[in-house]
Image (cartoon, rainbow, N blue to C red; front, top):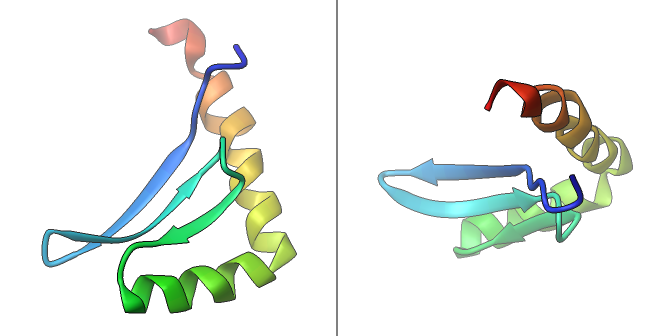
Length: 66
């Protein structure tokens, strides 16, 4: 169960500009807009804690279904 990964990717006009990866534990920006927003989101500890909790709430909860 340690290899379960939660990824939240954000796209605009078919271009990925930011991503949260539970293995990394923070947002990563891929464009100038994404980098700016990733820095803002990473400063918000409640946002990071909520995204990390999504791994347990969504991924691990549904592991038996697959």
